[in-house]
Amino acid sequence: MDRKRILLCLAHMSGNEMKYIQEAFDTNWVVPLGPNVNAFEEELKHFAISKPDINAGQVSETDDSDRLWPQSWPELQDREVVALCSGTAAVHLALVGLGVGQGDEVLCQSFTFCASSHPVTYVGAVPVFVDSEKDTWNMNPSLLEEAIKDRIRKTGRKPKAIIIVYLYGMPGKIAELLAVADKYGIPVIEDAAEGLGSRYDGRVVGTFGCYGVMSFNGNKMITTSGGGALVCPDRESKNRIMFYATQAREAFPYYQHEQVGYNYRLSNICAGIGRGQMTVLDAHIAHHRHIASMYAEAFDGSRGILFHGNPDSHCNSNFWLNTVTLSPDLRVKGQERAYHAAIQGAVGGAAGVVHATGQVHTDCEPGANVEAMRLYLDEANIESRPLWKPMHKQPVYKDCPAYVNGVSEKLFKCGLCLPSGPMVTDDDVRYIISQIYSACDC
Image (cartoon, rainbow, N blue to C red):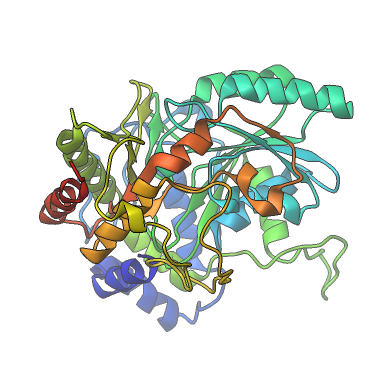
């Protein structure tokens, strides 16, 4: 999925994208700074603080003017954005910005991708996992408070930060989560990597906490091929993050380092792609939501297949990935052959190198009917994926504290992600739906 998405985006670049990239070469700004980076940060800032606009989505791909979001949230005017090489780097620097260090504890959502929790270990802190609620699939506010109280009892101090995630673009119960965080005076990092363009009570997610994380990986709402950004509370915080993102250099005519820094800035070339992609962001969000409506209508009233939509009026998901859950008693063709052979390489479009274990089963895995559905769709040239495996069930985190209620494990066992990107057509969706129903052994 990732490689195909990147190649398609590059092959169908708008005039703006090519123009910004060409400008970078012509002016010799082929480095991790430059005019495109600065402009991209400003455009992201305008988007992040914007109120819903009746004209959203009507900015032309060839419009060379500044993005025009005439209404904004006054309380967000001081927010600033730093463009970085990845969303993972943004999570890492948010923790650094909050002073999280060796031996500290950070409360993390368990039901998520590992990029939300791995950076906690980068700074020498300990992730403490909190399970989900069943409505949005995100961090459970009641369980969060229970975890805070218990950590204070057991360690004598508060966790240093809370990382909340918006799974597959769905906003969590933000008001309730922030109320708990405020009660105990713990800063919140919003991992909105999957939620670019999602809103809660009309406000863009990633702007409620102290820091907000964005991602422009190849499979996200817009892509810079690889990249991310961090929404900071003010200019001072941005400067601090920029300091650490550019190797933490002191003000001398030579390289003086008194703190450990990182090489995390976004390149001017990638930022140029991002600027062009910003002109189609609204259209991408609208398309993802359109696909969601098609899936929702197709599975409405279905026996055994449930589409995960907005649970209430507070949430307005971008539906980065559309997801369904299968009833445990739903039979799928070929179910008896699920988990028949060990996986040898990366599944679907997964990037990188994987470690082949030779094992077929783990102690926490999708149900046989979910794996059978994935294999059936794969045979029909349709890529689907299981939901994220909860972090508290990952072997690498087996010794970390966890406060669980069974929700994320149950969802992982029965859930599936369906094709959702901007290159997925209505005909594609109809074909996917027909194949899902064809797979059901009813």
